[in-house]
Length: 221
Image (cartoon, rainbow, N blue to C red; front, side):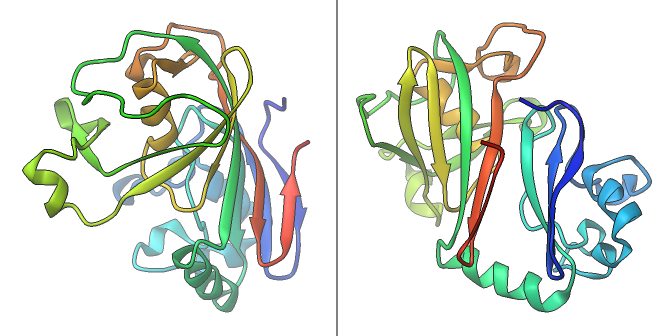
């Protein structure tokens, strides 16, 4: 799989970029000069900075990948496309596909019992809460907890085992660290994911390899 950031597809309304592992998708508000996938996109397509929603410093970026995760990111080049895609996401019409290389792991502290059986076509779903010092990680909320009813949205990860500890995964709507947390919950931490029980590796075992939206599909495979 690729290792360097590049433009994968460019159309009049959007661009799709490959983000390398270790690069932020967007900067923090107070660190807008820091290199990111957005700054890379803006060097080639400056109009991306003129698009966006409530967080104006995130430009036309329509979804994020965690810093260690590599793969495809969709960025709008105009406000009309951005607004249409926001509505598509709300309706579940923006699908992201991932490849995960995992390793058998001890489930970290703070997880409720895993209520699923890993099988073909499994859907792992949960609501989430922040966890740990500074809320750097997340955990599924135990359905028996009072917090479960007070938390509005549930998120789903579709899981298909490829072979051994390798998986295909799909999301329609995503939460921060969703795949990483859901796989760790199943006892299959992503290789290299120290935050969720994985072992130190030379590379991080999660790649976003395909995006599907508005009848289009962009894939690395």
